[in-house]
Image (cartoon, rainbow, N blue to C red; front, side):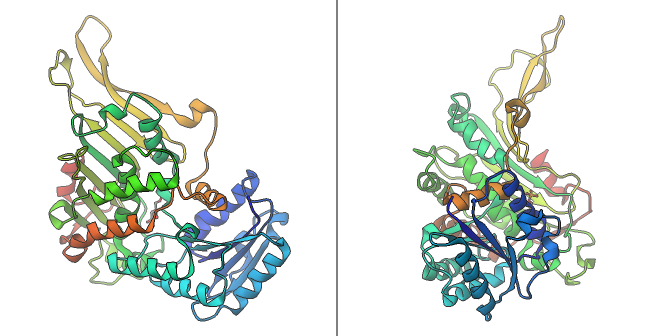
Length: 437
Ligand code: BG6
């Protein structure tokens, strides 16, 4: 890996504190950082070094904190240039934009004006990328004024989760699953990410963004892309993203008829939330991929805050056998992926109940991947940071994909369903429960 100056915008934000600073420390410790690196933490005010207080001294010394905003880049330029001077010729810059969607365009513009967006730069764009199709196109246009597409890494950390990549591995590295992976054998697909967490102090982001933009058009749709895409001809980023973009192009536009929005009771009492907010904290969406492979198969997507239980599962539910020779419970085969850092894969099957009976009962063939392979993967953000160092776009989203998703979302954004209240700790509004039972 080439030497890197990493510039982290939003250095004091929630994401940086929870994932990015710790992730960099872990990459160092795992020997997966470039050998030569400097880190510049940037905020409107220069952030406090306390952010890396628990880093070992030798890493601590690699960090500078600086102030930068859309109309003030002098300190940033000075600190980035000083860092490059230490690393010498051939060093690159990574700009990690961990800032609210509404601030992106101006900050990208600032990078252009400052002269920092040169050939050696790579820019990582946090999601959501824009807030609708026009703003996404405008943001892409702004980026392309200063950066070539291969310098841009639009991050969606769900694609960095090991188990999301296992969707591809199970499909394309085995003979067992792919022949079944179509409407002739699949009854439905469920992508289910209920969260127990509430707002966690992110009210202003959430009021601006809402659940659909925060999670659905981003993480859940990207995972849908891995499930629905045709086989790529290689694991090259270009091939894979072409197939994913085609799957998105085949999505039927989302409408209120196929969507249920909810808001947990008490949301409006949270600090920073409008008393009459209609922002959704829960979405269930029935999506359709209108192509030869998937026509007629519903893809149920669900996610929400303050729900009964946290899960991150993808389930491909197969049709039941046409004739049933056995007594006992009916239960379809379900191929399931738990999108954890420690991936869990399973196939629900019916086996014969031991003893003098012809009954069958459902159970699971399951794999705990880390345990089975005696290894441990990286946390999603760590994996993706490492990919940026290596210049690999495989797990990042491309301009056209993101714009297509916003286009498909446009009818729903223009005319969303009424937001229904739901109790904290529940499974969301009543109507949505049936979709997932
Ligand atoms: C983030 C969303 O992108 O993903 C959060 O902004 C959400 O609202 C989070 O809680 C979930 O990610 P993970 O990795 O914890 O499943």
